[in-house]
Length: 400
Image 1 (cartoon, one colour):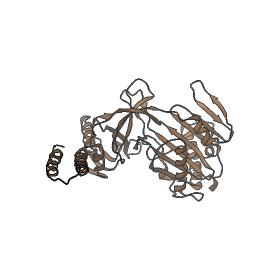
Image 2 (cartoon, one colour):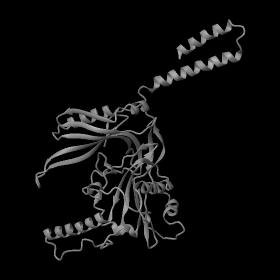
Image 3 (cartoon, one colour):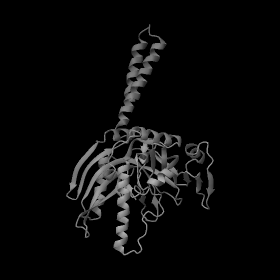
Image 4 (cartoon, rainbow, N blue to C red):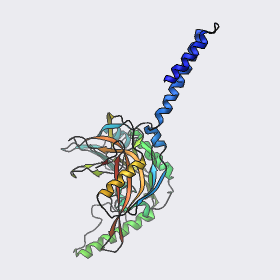
């Protein structure tokens, strides 16, 4: 700034000695000096800012810290200028918006239980509205629930079920392209004022694999009962609406979305806080689309921002977050081999008072890693456990 004033003073001296110089010329010259100063200050401030740190994060980090700690990870960061810590609360979706989305021009029966959960039914579908989750299911969904409910999406790290992508491998279905199905699902979320990231996790559920998985699950459940000596054998499909034969009319897409807050993804994974007595939910949304339209919708852990809690002066880099995680791993003297294979910059809900409904959405580096848990006594195979370490991007401390 001082440099600008010196230049401006020199210009004034020159201009004052020129009789034909107008007041307007002096004003224009002054404005140019001000703009020069502003440009210089902006350039100076970009060093170390949140924006510049994220812009300079490499798309892949490959580093060996020790024999038992390796990083070979793709890095995902949003395009943002700031990352404020937000005060937020877990939210209930607007009842009227849900009715307009699922029961337009219909009159479903309504019930409310003692703790305020709302239920709607009309004979063809049901809608459950609670404080931290919403669930809509049609009868068509109930007919295909049995062969898919023991599967998990890629982001569900702690599920014991197989991943959808391991079994349901078809890319497109005949009734609609995957892109069209995603657009249909996203339109629903927009109608419910749920902001989502562009990238989605989507699977095409074809009828042949549905049939195969239903038959396989029935046989597996019966085999487990026989091994346990259960007599008489119980029907493993009891409580489900089962179809004996699936056709192309039963095919659908299942789509998982990443929720955004202020253009920053919110973690989809839940985690236990330090005392182990409370679980903080990530934000998830899942939509199933068939030829008949949306046959199921589920959301859990959506947050509503109630204001800015803190404006951080800056954040640590992804490399520093890895260093911190490595030091923490060393401090527990573990010999398990750790391979970090994914790094995300995202919001993580953090507890800050005794109200279980209120959190602070805190910018964090989420490090997804595979831990070598030794050899299984059951089959002699190597045990791999996938976990996430959340590093607070402001303080550098682990979130737990």
